[in-house]
Length: 270
Image (cartoon, rainbow, N blue to C red):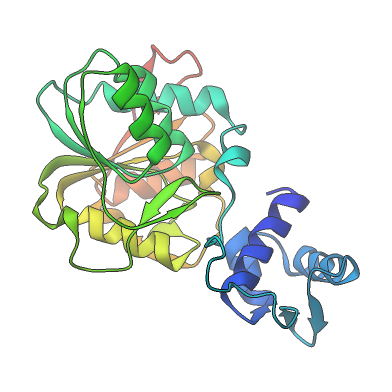
C-alpha cells in the first residue's frame, strides 16, 4: 500500500475513532511500525490530526457528524481498481466460468469481483450484490436478475452495508458466494474494517459454497478481522505469482485452488 493510500485509510479510521493506535494502523494497512510512525507524523504536520504518545488523535470536532458521509477504514474503490488489473480480469473470467445459467449467486463488493460484470453480460443468473457499480453494470448490460441489500451507502468503497442482522437478504439462498478480501492467511479470510467483515459474514450465511477471488498481492498479511476460516472456502482463484507456500497452505486446508494467467482464457487447477 502506497503512502497516500495509507493516509486515506488512517483518516477513515480517525473519522470512526477519536484515537488510532500504531498497532491498529499497522493491521489495517499492512505497513511496518516505522512506516506508520512516519505517516502519523506527516498527517500531524499537515494538520489532519494530533500526534500523541503511541497513536494519532482526531482533531476535536472533526469526527463523523450527523449528515456527514460515512467512511470505512479501507482503500477506496477508485484507487484499488487501478491495481493489478490484468490479474483481476483473469480471475473474474475464471470465476464466471464456474457459474451456470439459472444459478443464484452472491457477489460481494470489491474491485476484483467488479470485473465479473463484463463476463456476465451474456449470462442469465440471479445476482445479489452489495456493490452498486456492479449492480448498475449488470442492470444496464446483462440479462441477469439483480438484487441489492438494504443499508447505508459508502461512497469511497462503493458498497451498501447494513448494520442490522435482520434485513432483506435473510431469505436469499445462493449456490455460491464470490468474495474478494484484503488478505488471506493461516487464520482464513481477513478484512480490515469491522463493518465490511460483518457484512461479508452475513452474506456468507446465505451461500452454500464460497469462492474467494484474490490476486497474489493479497497473500501479504494485513488487516485483523477474520471473516471465515480457510476450511469454509470451497475454491480460491488467484494468479500465477501467488507464493508456493500460500498455495500449499490452501491445499492442506482442503481448498481447491485455480491459478490463472494474465491471458484470461487460461486457467490451471493447482
